[in-house]
Image (tube, rainbow, N blue to C red):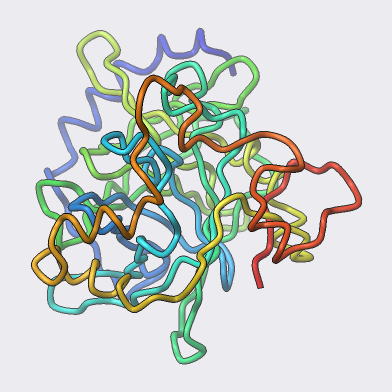
Amino acid sequence: MSLAMMAAAPSLAEQNAATQPEDSLVAVDTHPWSAIGKLNNGLFGACTAVLIADNYALTAAHCLYFKLLRRFLPPESFRFALAYDNEHLGDPLHVLAYYVPPAYDPRRPAETLENDWALLQVAIDPKVAARPVPVAREVDLTRQAPVMTGGYSKRRQHKMSGDRDCHIVGSTSDEKILFDSCRTPEGYSGAPILALDPERRSYALLGIHVAAQAWQGKPIAIAVSAATIWPQIRACIETHQCRFQHVARTRDPTAAEIFAGLPNLGLRKVIGIVADGLCRGDDPQCGLPVAGADANALDEQIAPRPTRRDPVPAAGR
């Protein structure tokens, strides 16, 4: 497949738009929807994330960046509410650390779109019976694969909706970016693109939704391919040889207070929690991840320097 295959997208998008009911709700207590959750940043912002292993989840990198402060928020300000529903709060998980590819630049989101993903390390209560959705080791684009997705739209912030009937309709020539016909309203950033494996016995994650693009008047969803993500996180998921640039300093209970809402804290205190200090002036690097071995001094206090130069995230405790 190549970008030229986008020529096939309008007909697929039209068919999907014509047949897919708006905001089709899904049952959060059934797999694979039970592996999807709402990622709250404590400042009235939210995205979608998906559990891919016992202590790891994926989302979009831009969901972790706060434009007003011009910096990535600290892990302790996030709560991942797994299988959230307004009649059931789900399983709120602490975010202990996260990794953003150093090549991602939130000031240039379009130019660095293929790196718009993030790996979260989350603390799962042993009593939580969560079944993750594994990342596909390979993405077969020789056919128009049927896929589905689910997330938390801004229109229905307290209910998970989904599109169960969509397709991969194209990719960039390097296959790092996928295009699909799924309906992805605002709030779906970080949502998984899911497909059944060849034996149709289990689901796998083919990509992470990051954007949408109009194509001849019809929306086409854009996802970072699992073929891009998996090589960078494999050592972390399989052998815990990982490193994160952003590590929580404490499991401060204020994270739960933030999740509960601003009335408990007040905006001034929230700003103090989520930032060491506001970015001032025109410093373009303020709050951005730093590439290389010395990305974060705190990280070196927690995890030893790796012996090889794999571009992988990192382990926390």
